[in-house]
Length: 196
Ligand code: SF4
Ligand code: SF4
Image 1 (cartoon, rainbow, N blue to C red):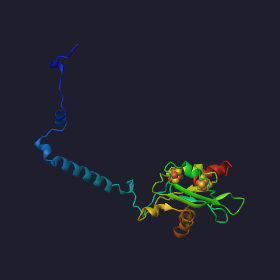
Image 2: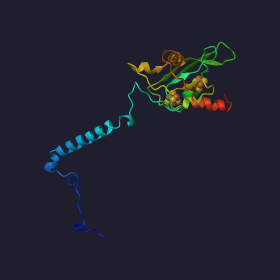
Image 3: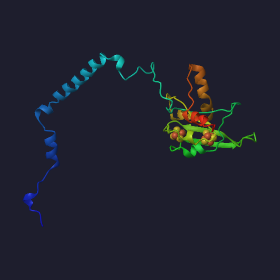
Image 4: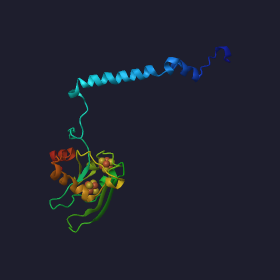
């Protein structure tokens, strides 16, 4: 059955918008909105002033939060007792990495008991999404994450963490400013199961 044109109600977008946001001179003045915004700011300012100790913000960097043990910050490479990397360049971490930010070049190790070692091992810190998959994938427990979340640089190259840096930054930080190392949860879990 054809629709009777008199039954059709035309709704124009401009009309709906005008209805929701009427162009009144009062609104066009913007003064009520400005005064309302200032009043909200003032109200919160006074409220916070009366409750400075209860504020959720902290005075960073003088004050820092202690993040939980499951926090995933910058990686480090673990060492063997002789100081060499535990990593055997098996590429499992690079394969598991969803951000494709681990670059490894493997080489033959002079010790026949160790098949390979990483000639190059780099993580692009700017691409890393701190998912921790590389830690889970490592069969040697050679890589771990820390609670370290502060890093800065002048260019992209400063955020390429190479093998030497990943092996040593944590030790240097412990000596320099008493950095509290944190053994990652995966290692603890494996140790508790006797699989490490
Ligand atoms: S934490 Fe995730 S994104 Fe970062 S290097 Fe490891 S696997 Fe890749
Ligand atoms: S998974 Fe572990 S042993 Fe294998 S390349 Fe990565 S860090 Fe090295």
